[in-house]
Image (cartoon, rainbow, N blue to C red; front, top):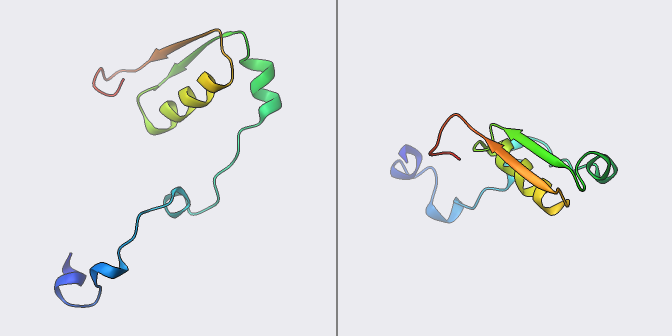
Length: 79
């Protein structure tokens, strides 16, 4: 905000963030063979399911054909 007020940056310079901007690297793709062996048709439990990594894992596990997904989280709000 200070740079905008000082005229160093304009609103036209603002853009939406990509995940790579936050990671500092390209996103890694899941290993489909590993997911198939360990998840398909099985009951899977994710601890920390309300966090950024846990919620992403839950989404990928759901799409991978798990029989049942159990979510665990300390914070009810996050879960």
